[in-house]
Length: 353
Image (cartoon, rainbow, N blue to C red; front, side, top):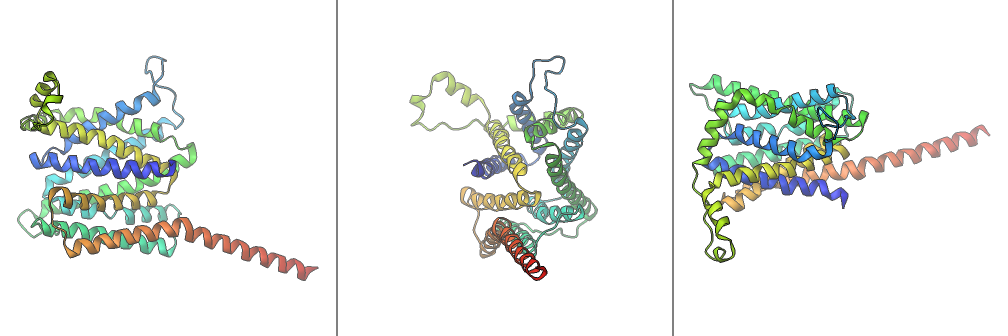
């Protein structure tokens, strides 16, 4: 059951998070900064009990990972989140954003290779195939919504090019961060809650200069209409609670839901990262992206095209191939090589005797 916990948290939390995010963006596309801040606050508060102490002045227990390592991880985490959010200000559409971020498996594998890690041919083929599948799915989604998945040549070409560059930098930094965190766990132990807490806590002061923008985004979300209560439920809800519900804008409910599901999602990602390689984490997250696409089709009524189906097949097939190669194929070949080496040594001993 413990092995299934991380995937359950990732697919349950992350997919619900995307639903809440899409619902918020339907009301106000320019809410990314506020959404990010709320997620950071809730995650920091939720993880604090695991790091708390009765010792003043910080009331935090001594960390097992050196503070300089945690600070480096936090700086990269904040930079990746802010760069991904900033890219929307440079004529980057959501489909293009998703397409470029789907290169995570490739950049993570390259980063791992540069740090001395090796991968089998089947793992490389699976990662490339999966990336192509996610790209096809995102492209199909863009076509279905009447958008284009490439940057057209307009008077804003320079702005779009800068946005693409920002996303590329964010993706490379994200891949390096994944390898850095994995190496940290290998050296100091898998204290993922510690890393999770400080990566969010130390990011919060960096939002202070952005307070005017945050205020404007909150005001726009607060202007959304209140939710509609089904008449069948009204008799069972106390009057005071009914009034509270009807006074709270719908987008603020979705903002709270987005933050809560982000906590569930990121907990699953950290659990998986503590037990698996950075490439495995990226593979699982890419499959999760496709599941979010399929849920978006079902919930929001987006059409399912043949191209989308092809992308789904490539992603799930590549994910299965990578999983088999990692858990069965590589181990089986190593075991076979061990047996062959053992037999060879026995033969050599017999000849010597």
